[in-house]
Length: 273
Image (cartoon, rainbow, N blue to C red; front, side):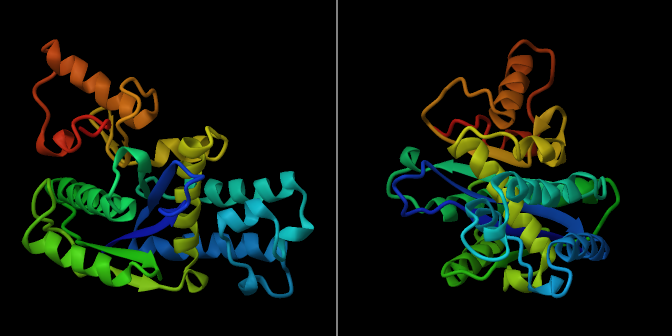
């Protein structure tokens, strides 16, 4: 089974933040132990006497307000965040990052987390369909950090399997999402870092974390399918999600490539109309 671990970064209610991001990583079930062991090793280097007490939350590490991060310099704390992301970057080639960055002001009256969740459910489903077409018939399961949105997201996931998303019925998920405490899941802590890296890239223009995992986002046919930038503010955005889509659209307009396949046509432009 393919497991998509997701966590969010940013707050829908925080007016000082332009973005909310839902993001994470898809791994085959047998691969989760590798990432757990690697994060355990990193935790041991930070707190040798009690490594299992170390929980990697990128925003808390960055802020350096609570132990053990409050004893670190800014550079040391940033090094820890990068260390977590490098574990993903050098991990299995088949591990894929997914994220949806929502520009909140572009969608007034809409819950950005629900918007991002619908998008990623569809993207993960289409990713699984692509694997199935290549002979991998494993289904998927989405695992999220416990949150106040649990009931809503479970309901949405059930509806996606019957009524469908705006892009069609979700067919390759084995069950409704599972919610777990991030403190007991190292891979969920990696998902937290993916979401934070994307959040920093879009909300603060800070690419030092995102660049470490940019190549891990699911991509096919020259399009970065695993990353979406939902916004109506910048028609010529040069981020990987927007740029790869515009390049594909341009080639299709010039007849260089055939029209987009169903997966490619999801969010035909990252600028949502």
